Image 1: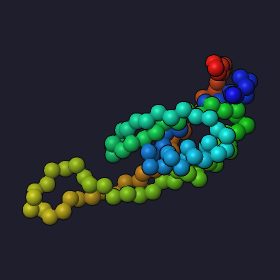
Image 2 (image 1 turned 90 degrees about the horizontal axis):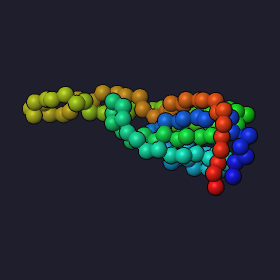
Image 3 (image 1 turned 45 degrees about the vertical axis):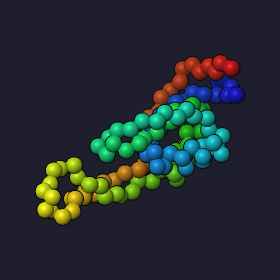
Length: 115
């Protein structure tokens, strides 16, 4: 159980579904509580995970370090969505930067945990 006065920040963390498991394992090991929301979207229509993390602002730097460690961006080649002639031989690929994380931080005026 989290004490009501200890949560004064809410971080919304959006990460790739491929990197989410590693991040969630690390969050659990470090004592962060979170809610997971599965989603998909973006240009690549890849699976994404949205994590809601309530915490004290004194732990934000620790959380950001964990995110940086677990969610590195990388380059991936993906097929283009254009129509091509069957005689072309291969599907054109484009290079895209994937992974990493998008983080939103909000102040929490009131936190209640109902058990």
